[in-house]
Image (tube, rainbow, N blue to C red; front, side):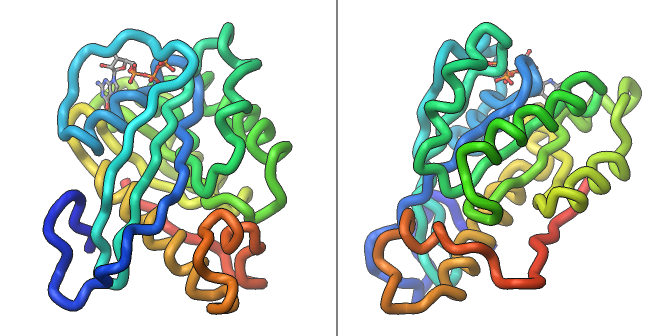
Length: 214
Ligand SMILES: Nc1nc2c(ncn2[C@@H]2O[C@H](COP(=O)(O)OP(=O)(O)OP(=O)(O)O)[C@@H](O)[C@H]2O)c(=O)[nH]1
């Protein structure tokens, strides 16, 4: 289990945290900024639509190592779409967010994924599909199974969450952190040192990242 912004566990590595760039993408109002705010500041409040991009950092102490997330929260509104891909550059991980009460946001997630894929080689970036707003389950338009199926077909991690209720938010980032560190361990140790380099490796053949939770 990760411990964010707390004293490292005894025995944890004392070396400086590895830095990973994580981008949040998805349609407008799905809750990207709210997930980031909940994760980084444990807060939930009314937020104006993002203009361009917002930036957060968070240090996470895992059992085996510490890492620092540089979180880039991109604008989901259509009018900013053309500039969003500029923020993808150099990303190690992405949260592809949709709103479980909006089928449209789920369908649009495919387009966001295509945009992301056009900038990277297969397997170059850890991608987690996130169905947000589970507290509004009475208005649900996308089933858990639909989300899971789409994620599996594209070899993405998958979780549902509620930024409002702080349900599964830390778990999302922990799962991504775990996957990033595991991918690093699989590469030649002599190549370690620059996470941007090591993550340009395809995942281990035959291994599919799996993570599904409501
Ligand atoms: N009920 C509920 N509302 C949420 C949740 N997460 C976000 N919201 C609300 O959804 C609206 C949009 O949230 P944002 O975090 O601004 O969404 P965004 O995806 O960053 O939007 P853009 O900046 O336009 O791309 C706000 O009114 C939030 O309060 C959630 O988990 N549950």
